[in-house]
Length: 597
Image (cartoon, rainbow, N blue to C red; front, side, top):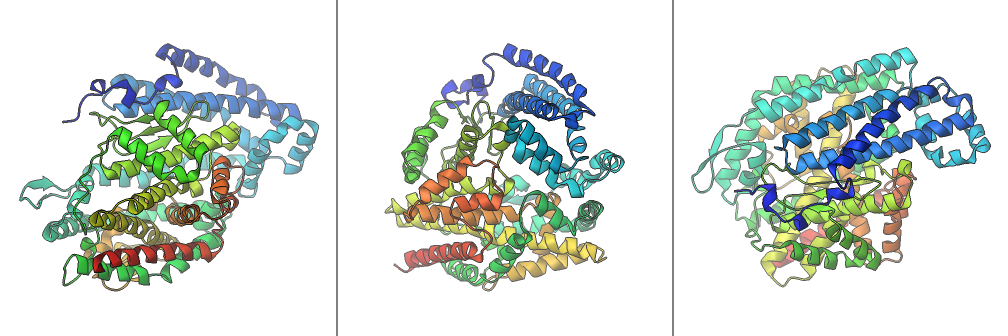
């Protein structure tokens, strides 16, 4: 049974006192910030009257935003460390309401700035050189000028924003609360409820009949609600297309990529290159089929373990030692900075009752990053810790080297540092174990990550692009249209040597990312970038470590594509993806050799 939070030592918990030493300090800052919000009013209608006004309102906004971030992180992490604590539920809710007031107070700033031409901004920067520190931010604002509507139209879109999120809101309620998958028996004959959380345990069962039952039952249930899910997804797609059209974009995809500074060929090249490299995955299916001694290989067999589960348990000290050793290739400065995460209370380890599920890293510019996980001592948990500390170090270096307005790096590069850490950890473990079964387990795990991140997320990306194009062409996105397309893509992306079970046609109904407006492709591109960076480092390529550490410092001072070039990765060229597939093929060959020896 999980223990209460009070039963764990303070050494296992993150240090919230770095945010506010006592709660009274939080309350004082909360009140002080409330009194700051009315100060925006005096600039309304006057922002661009002169250079000083522009500088003052931006400086005010950075100060308020930075302080609000500190309040928010305090409430956010206190709430997540024990979601049953009503005191912190209330405190977090208060910060959320304060944030709403802030958003309302600053809502006039961007529209007012965009009423003028950027030439005026350039003139003001000359007049007041201190404005230079906001130049990137101002350029980012003006980038959207041609797609910004008049005051009345913008107000209408703002008023309708809650309605636009309805498909996602309803999807979440249906999938998270209302949908029930029934019960199945595990390999020991014990009857247990099938849920999205328990599904992973069943689909990874060494017992094939358990895997098959879980797979069929889960997707049949989604299929039973196919009309509802199709209606929701069609509404989401129509919303994306209509908003993009109203704002003058060619497509919803174009709108999403333009806002993130991503050339459309990045998206296109990803799909094209992955589809040219299906053969290695087919080779892996053949190997796994043989390893599992199966006559036929189905989708529900892809998650089956090819070795016994790793039983070794790690203490927090073990995990720390392992990470410091596996990441030592990043150099002494990185390692000394990484030690701070353990020594200065960045990490919250206790698996206490009421703690939020999963793991994450969040950043506070004026303090340091915070990492949450429920540490259980498993190797998978150590890998999760490596992942989240990758995020933490990315935030740490960005905050240390950039001003507040320039530290928040793009979503496009957000998963790079985390994946680099996981790959380096896995490669270290493989190189430093003599246990043949352990090597098989580790290599299989890397292959599974590649399959899930490169192949599967790219398949999602093509599905998402296609359904938006079909809607633009006037096609009605019925469940039949969606399911037929999805089934065909599974056949194309999963290749030969596998049976594409018919019920997988309903998996599109299970994917929440289809309500995030072209998000999923970034998992694949980030993983490909991480592979190149990690392998360049391990192969001791000249300046690989130096370039990577420079990349971590950039924040958002360069576009995502230019940022990755600093790390030695050019995502505009197929070479990066091709190198990723060479890495993947090498893993399969290494695993094959272990079975042959």
